[in-house]
Image (cartoon, rainbow, N blue to C red; front, side, top):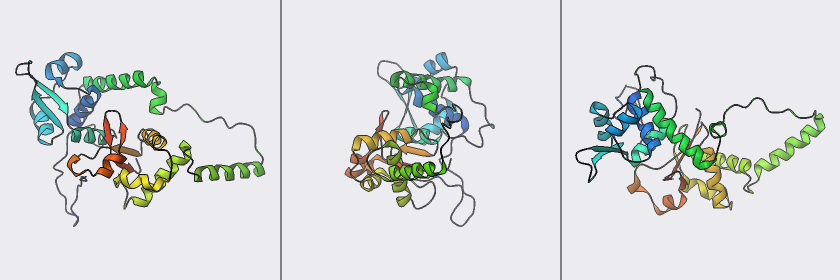
Length: 254
């Protein structure tokens, strides 16, 4: 998987040939939420924006969006995210420093919000739960003596250290496995290399925790956009999230 860079090894500035504008990034997220081919007329009628001109050409040229005619619909182009587009969209979920430089149609937000609403309905979850909304400080509970607190701390440490499949301890184990494999900050690591370090924990438990971790702001779980390079081990270790098999893990500062 390639990594974008704004400087050459010698320190001289280089142009990022894969860069997209704020508007183009927002359109990628809107297409993610739709999850199916959509035409400009439908985008215009429902969300008051279209994917045309330089924006369409840029996303087509980068291989992030396919714009093709569908038999029976005349000369109308339908836009669909490619595998690389899904991967790129997941990287655009974090705040960009240049987001104030370009205006983005309000309809893009509602196109994305519509997809979030479908997810919440399907998963039967409240939006606050899904997005980790702040619900106030935790209840401190009854006062605990220093001796009892020390005992509880030791017990908690033992729980975190085990590999029994408990979600909290299993996430700690996954994070430790990632740290042992990553060579530097923001390094992508293959799940095929992570899973053997998790011991004999049930596969379904690992997948469940990976899905939970993928919702955290410091974690990314994405497909490898270079599908042809995937090995049998990569495919076997992939975790299914939504409609895609995901092969790469990144854990780092927000």
